[in-house]
Image: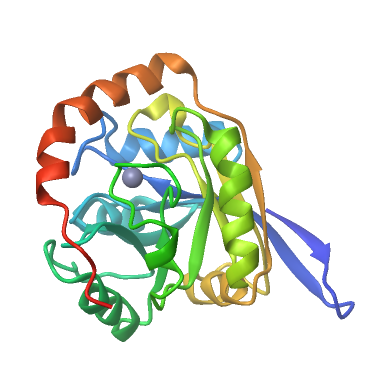
Length: 239
Ligand SMILES: [Zn+2]
């Protein structure tokens, strides 16, 4: 954590936060303790815990965070695709229409990010739909996707054309990949509210490198196993 000079000459914290991390409360091999230890080892200031359809790991991480920042969150499987909710402490149930899930995140004061928005078949809505949803930010870099550089360009274009804040995260499902990508947030303070406020104002940059193929291959195996079911479940978004 270090101070930087802000736009108006005031001091701002420059925080490195991995905005997309899973624990073993969903489908990661990493315990909460391992995630926090890995975050410290990688020199992060904090992590957002975004398990699939549960906040149990996020709340445990908040209790155990010590000197780290923990943004509680959830990766919500909606009827139409996945969204990331940041700053929520009550679970948003899976299977809701996406517009209702977004409404529930906002009613908790949370921030909605579209994860891996241009990677086909992994719970994304497609650009046309994203443009019409009341989302708050775009994950422009996801370290675990197979070709993050290619999608980075497309995601940047999408975020810029929508005028939405840009975030990056590792989408880590292993202790080793925590911090492979992170968001640099220029925040007036270290609280979750101050950080999300800074993100809302677009005070972010992204830091990224792809995760190793060793881990990508392990993720891809699970992806191919679930693909037929994911395709069967696809529903058009009623907009
Ligand atoms: Zn994820």
